[in-house]
Amino acid sequence: MLTVQLAYEFRGTAIKVNAANPGYTATDLNEHQGHKTLAEGAAETGRLALLPTDGPTGGFFETSGRDPGEIAHRLIARLDRASSDAAPADWS
Image 1 (cartoon, helix red, strand yellow):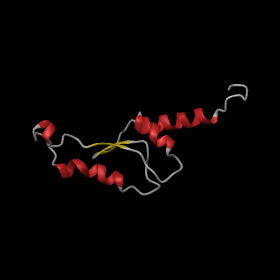
Image 2 (image 1 turned 30 degrees about the vertical axis):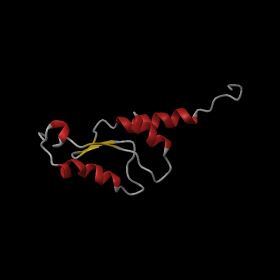
Image 3 (image 1 turned 180 degrees about the vertical axis):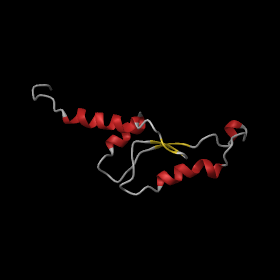
């Protein structure tokens, strides 16, 4: 949810906010039992860091691609709709 909130806050700017799943990467946390090397685990994070300004934002990514649920984009659209509904002037 934080990814979606930050992506919403930075909408209209060149800043992109996404989450990445490195997969089961061999690190000290799992006693190097992971199936991916550090370089393989970092690949998706690196790709996201180098996105162009018109790249995706508010998404969850892994090496196999974007989260198929597209939940983040639905939440951003909902936030956009909610912020465009102006409260009456007497609601202060």
